[in-house]
Length: 253
Image (cartoon, rainbow, N blue to C red; front, side, top):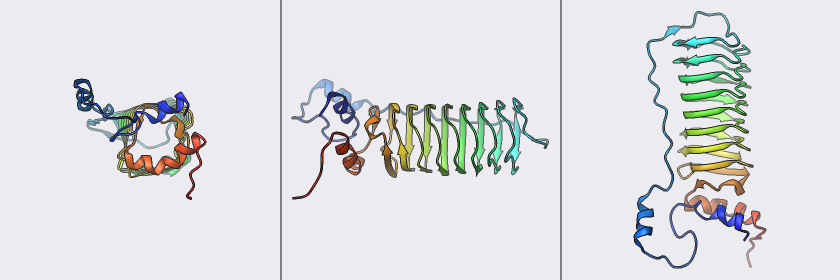
């Protein structure tokens, strides 16, 4: 096994003996057991002020929306590229093919957004909650997500290629074929969610907690899990992928 690949295997599994050999009980090892296996993500805590209803019309590029409530509106196909959404609530809004590239969402809640082809390329989300989303083909490549919670719902083909995620929690949601290729993930947790067909090619990880994912399927990039923590059960599920990476064939007698 090459040194680089050994670095991926060591430390990626929580529980049990990881490096082989006999266990030694020392003061140092006891201290390391007391330390958390992975640093927890700092969760977004959004507290919205009193909001005023959106006055109608369409989103405008580089618009400034402060303390605005968008309730049950169809924003599909509109152009809000570069806009700032601060202390806003978007509830039950249609976002099909809405252009929000380079938009900034700060201290905001997106509740039950729906639609296909939402363009959030290079957008910034900070202290944001996304609740019960029903979205497909969301373009968030090159985006920046900091202190974001994605809770409930289902997102198909989420494109986070080359994005930067820090203190992000995916909770009780379904992610179908999410693309994390070449992204940077730090203090990211997958809790009670299903991750199906994920692409982690070239992903850089630090303190990524995958242990509580109810379902974990990795299509590409299994060799890029250094910096993540998985459970012993997940290791068994992913064993064939790990073996393939080091050229080991598994066959019965």
